[in-house]
Length: 317
Image (cartoon, rainbow, N blue to C red; front, side):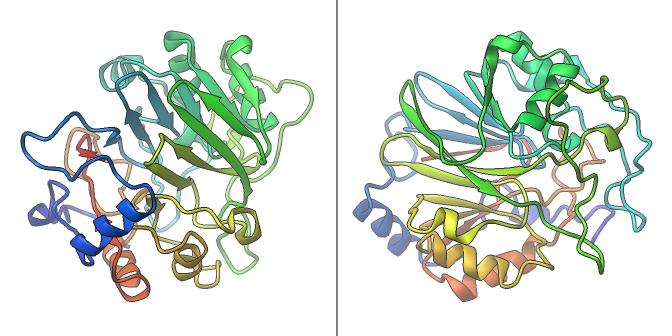
């Protein structure tokens, strides 16, 4: 694990493209592909993708804003210290930061229930009126934190929903494990009765994991919020872009298998690699080794472009 000030500034501004760019674009076009290459003076992009740190992503089109795991409060927990996150850390919701960086949302997709994925969602949902997708546990945790009941949509995998200008397909998944006994950090579920309001990060349990395929019509994105997946669930999907994160040490051939099952996508986007004890308004500090991830992608899928998008930066598709 690398900590400190390893920002790698020369690799910023989404300039790190690994693979044969022309081949990747051609492959995308063959599959239905991107609307246009990213060039100065080009037409309005079909989808603008923006990274808000961790696994928080914003997809913006002319008519809608979709968010995945929108957590920007980034209160310190020690997650990337040798001893890991302090389970007694108090949950903080920084409404001013959320208002600044997440002005709108139509749909919010939750991959699992840990604090760095859902802690900001109840406030954001209440402010924006967005539809929120998640498991029974995720929704119960958010109900306990004040999320509006009328906006909560319980999913478990297998759903395919039509929204205005895009579809969302939901797949069952699993969270990555840690330690010799392969345990999920802050594991567990909260079905049935709404629990007491979560106060500490240990109260926000994993609650089952989901993955999502968002299709904007010719441009599609597959995001898994953890370094694990159910191969048989997603066999045959062919996204334009695949989000991959470092980790998955207990998931055999995590990177290589996920690339293969998704058809070696034209684009691979690094996610959840930053040490989120550091500010969102500064370049990302490495928490997970994206460089090793880049090298594995290049070896397994040389025609895929590897995109490293920094904090609050965008890429147009």
